[in-house]
Structures are given as structure tokens and as C-alpha cells.
Amino acid sequence: MNFKFRTKLYAVFSIIIIFAAASFSLFIRMHIFRQIEEETTYNDMQLCLKVSENADTYIEKLDDITKKLISDPGLLKIMRDVKSNPQVLTDYEELKRGREIASIVSNAITLTSFPHVNVYLYSQDGSFSYVYNQNQSNFEAAIQTDGNAKKLENKELVIYADNGRTVEENREPSISFMRAIFDVGANQYGYIEVQSDYKKLDEICNINRIGNVMLMNDRGDIVYPSSSVTENVQQVLSSSPADEKNSMFSVGDHMYFYAASDYSGIKTYIQYPKDTIYSSMRLLQHTTVIFFVCVTLAAILMVVISSRMLVKPLSDLRNSVLAVTYDNMGLSIENVYNNEIVELKDAFQKILDDLKMSAQREIESNKAETRAKLSALQAQISPHFIHNVLYSISIAAGEERTDDARIMCKQLSDMLRYTVNSNAHKVELREEIKCITNYLSLQKQYYEDFLNYHINIQKEAEIIKIPRLSILPFVENAIQHAFEGRKPPYQISVTARISEGSWSVEIEDNGKGFSEEKIKEIEDRFQDESLALDVETKSDDEPGLGGMGILNTVLRLKLFFEGNFEFHIFNHVPEEGSTIRLSGRCDTGDVEKPE
Image (cartoon, rainbow, N blue to C red; front, top):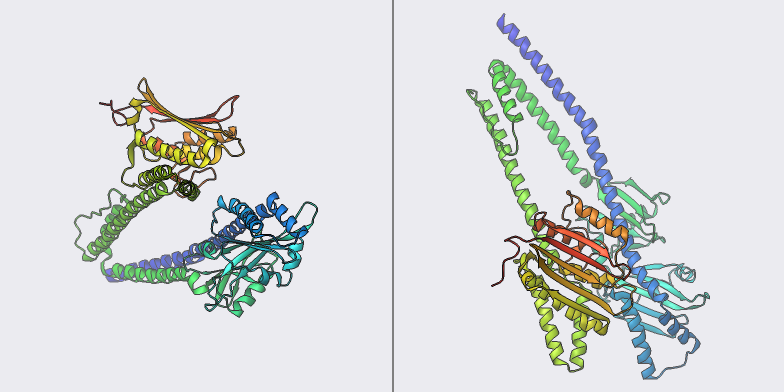
């Protein structure tokens, strides 16, 4: 009688377990896996759009150089003279004209992020040409390509990728951006070519080998990669749906994600092997099936062997698992005589221990990564600033002003040592002011009488403890942005004082000031308690030295002084300019009385 009842009990439990496992497995397959597949496809499509957007931004920036050059009045005058006066110039005249063109080209590319591009200038009849940097022009090959000459005559941008270089030719692959030179009367005088290598495109199209990125122009030519693609792939890309801005399609063993550029018409494709794109999901599916089969068989076996002994230990184990938190990841079961339950508990405990250890490692890794990024940001120096300093030193050396050259070299050396010293995150104000003084002095050498600065630091304020490179970004921000569109002389003053237990530092300039919207945005975000330090994003108004930007720099000070810090920014009315004020209460950690 008991045996028969136990058998029925075992059968009922077995059917319930099998049904539950099968239902749960089917639910996961129908909903979870489908959602994972949709998210995978969505993420890959977003990656394709992001690559397309970055490639478009890259092309737009290089095209901006061509637009600046063809609209430059000085360059247009030179090309008009070349067309109207084709006679041979003397060596001096030729040298003078070459220097004028070099100056125009240098000014057009100096403030961009592409300082090493090649620039070529051609007259309309081919009688005159000019080369800036290396002579590896693609103009002749591009102009002979069907349709390019017509596009240039229609004032359109021509993008030509020379990705057919061979090792014997000893020339690197390059990509060129060309426009025709017209005046306001639609008279054509020549052509301009701005050429870059593939290094920036390699960075943009690097997706860690999980797929192949390809860029195609409106003629169906492969712009990227620099190496040739197979004929089959070329045919697939040429026959892709062109009437949609972005889409995905499948051909053979590969998936293709497609996005079209709004600015340049460049089409971005990412090719994934199907086995690769869904391999993790399929592995998860197989693992899930095996897991459910194993769990089901184990559950049936345990029900058959020890239904009575299994109920209470499993209940205790369940309660213990539900009570698990990050601070308490220990499992405790009392009065257990079933070895299988003990082993199950030990297995769960090992998983929890490994999980906690993994979480701790991840936390430490994130902290280390954040510290590394902050150190890297603090060590960055604007290439344009270095260029100006070295240029000033070269002028001083050429004019035999050895003392000036020696002083500038010493100031630059002190700045470099201060900015890259990753061990000193907290410094005295006097050290920061010394770096600022060196910075302004070097800028003074470059701007000469156009720039005047004044530093007034109260003696008691010199030993205020502040984060390293927390005042300098505001000074550099004024140099880089405040004087745009303003006539010299430029005035900058830095004042620091202590009064009635409070310290303050003011950075004042006579520049264009901040818009009211910008001031409100900065102060509102400063008051936001949830504001977090962003070491990834760089904004347009962000200074190059230290790479921290106004918001990040202010937040560093706010975190350093633990909220005992105030920040204000306001424009001068009715005079021009603005003032940034940093202030806070003094305590023993910030300042000590000088001896």
C-alpha cells in the first residue's frame, strides 16, 4: 500500500518537474532568447550608425579645410594672378608666393586635429602647382575618373581613395578631398586637394575584429579598407538596398549592417559572420538545454531516492539563498545528514564566493581605471600650445636672444614636470600659481604686446591645498576661447586672497564673456547633486592643457573640499570680459599659517 502510494507520489512529482522544466525552457527560448537576438541586432545596427557618424565627422572636418582654403581671399588673389599673369616669375617672386601660400595653408590646418595632412594646389590649365608637405597627390588619378571632373565643375566635393598602392611603389594608401576654386562671379581658377592617410579611418573603423567595416562612395568605389576586398563582397555591397538610410540584410554566411551618411553620401557597411554574431546566444541556448535536462534528471532522482529527507533541507537552503546579500554571502543549513544537500550547499557557496571575489575585482578595476584616466587627462598638453612655444623659442634662437630662449626652455620644462607628476594630486596654491605664471609667460612670448597678465597672490593664500591642475584650466580656457573675435590687447588677471576664514581665487579677462544660457547651464549642473566626474566626454569649450573642462574641474574641487566650496561665473557689465570665482572656507587641511 505504502509502496504504491510512494510510487504514485514519485510519478506525480516527476511529471510536475518535467513539465515545469519544459515550460520554463520554452518560455526562455520564445521570449528571452528572442529578446537577446533583437538586442544583438539593435546593438550592431547602432554600432554601424556610430561608425557612419564618426566617418562622416572625419570627412566633414577635412572638407572644412578645403572650404577654408577655397574661400580665403589671399589664396583666391594668388590663383587669379596665376591665371591672368602666366609669365615666369623670378626666384624671389616664386619664393615669396610659395611662402604666402604656405602661411595660408598652415593657418587653415593649425587649429584642426589633422596637423599632418598634405595639401596640393593646381591652376585650371595645369601650368601651376603647389605642394604642402609630401608630394603624393591623387589629383591626376581622381580627375581622370568618370564623373569627378563634372562634380568639381558643379562645386561639389570629390572624395578619392587611393587604396591600390603596392609595396614596390613605396607609397602609403591615402584619401583625398578635392574642390574647385571659384570666385563670387563663378570664375574658376584651379583646384585644391587635401590629403590624409588611413590612420584616422583605421581608428574610426576599428571594432576589435568582431566584424569587417567597409566604406563605399556614391560611385560604388571602396573607400575603406585600404586593402582591396573580394569581388563577391564588392558585388554584395553594390547590390545592397540603396533606398533606405540604414538597414540590415543577409547574404550567404554573413550578415550586413548598412548606414548612409547625410553629409558625404558615404555608405558604411559592417560584415559579420553569422556564426560569430549569434555564437554566444547559441552557446547560451545549448547550455540552457543541458542545464535544464541535468536539473530535471537530478530532481527526479532526488525525489525517487529521498522525498521525505529532501523537503526540509531544500526549504532551509532556499531560505538561506533568499537571505543572501552582498555583505552576507554565506549559506547556513543546520542538522543536515544528506550528503547531496551538503554538496549542493557547498557548490552554491563556492559560486557566491567566486561572485563576490569577481565583484570586488571589478570594483577595484574600475577604481584603477578611473584613476588612470584622471592621470592621463592631467598629463595632456595642447599640441597647439607646444607648437607656439617651440616656435617662439626658435625665433629667439634665430635672433640670438639666448637668454630668452633659455628662460622659455626652463619654463616649458617646469610646466611639463608639473603636469606629468602623477604622484602629487594635492599641491599648495603657490605651486599651481608658478605653473600658471610659466604658462602665461610662454603665451606672452608668443602673443607679445597683444597679451598682458597680472598675478596678485596674498602671502597667506600661497599654502592653500588644492587639487593639482585645478586653476590652470580656467586660465587656459580664457586664452583659447575668451578672446575669439576680440581685438587686442588681451588682459588676464589671477587674484588669490584669504579673508575672515575664507579663501577665494578669481580669474578675470577682458574677452567676449559667457552667454547667459551658458552661465545658467554651468551653475545648474554644478548644483546637481547627482553630477558625476566624466573622464570620457570632451566638450567644445574644454581646454587642452589638463583636458578637464570647466565642469569637470569644478567638480574635482567640489569633491576635494567635500562640498565646502562655491563656484561663480559672471560677465562684466557694461565692460567686456568675465570673472570666474572659486571660494571656500579655510580649515587645517587647506591652509596653515606661514612661519
